Length: 332
Image 1 (cartoon, rainbow, N blue to C red):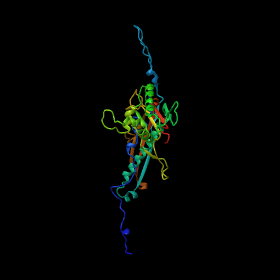
Image 2: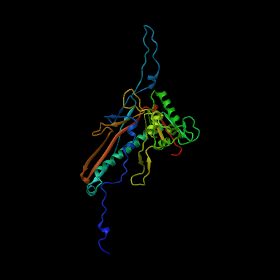
Image 3: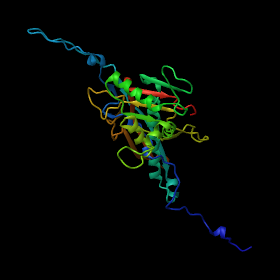
Image 4: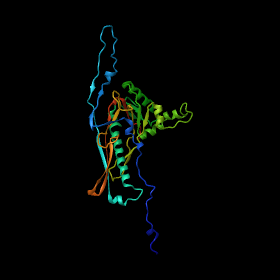
């Protein structure tokens, strides 16, 4: 047999214009889109709230000649606090690995992307654990497959269910209670798809959008138009809940739930918002999102470290303007 063979002479060389990596797009994350961001110079602090009852009561009186006007007032509550917990992750790149890396691998670029992705996932998971839950909101409804009673609604994937009526009824209730109409709806991906295929929404689209003259498109924007909210947000982010190195378990960050809430367009005084995301921008080098990426040399282990950290607090501040729908689907 002649030597060398073709297999001896051929060495696999990586393609320089193709690589496979699963990096989630920024648009898959919604933690920074629901509530306004409040930059803070200190990691923790207090904020002021007012008792709504003093502002909504009808206490102005008719005034007779030569008499004093009716008097009144309101209370100030400083018993509200935030604390921006700091989360961090790093990736070390040793000199040997960098020297042996072939294109399209770029150890510094890849390491920075990896660290950034980890921070986005942590922020999304933390936001969901503190806000996409029923316990923190005044309004709480639970889906059931049978006939709903008080505090319940029929699962939106069950025949005869009425998601439009369920959601708009809560819009009316919250507005009557607080004076503020909910303007955002967060739908877990499975719930979003169920609503896109629900008969109530399909019937609204059969003949196209009124006055447009072309077929409407089933989308988050369409759902928002039908329900009368400014935005429908869908968190498409995915998280692997298994420990590193073990068999992966992938799930959406949020599932089988919906959050209807009023969110102030921007942080302001004398205005409510279901929540605010406090971000610590006072930390040296931190950006507008309270995050920073550092790269520094560790000569004692012949490596460069890419380190990222983010300090934030996704905080519910006005629970009365929010409603959480649990168990939206009978089959999650």
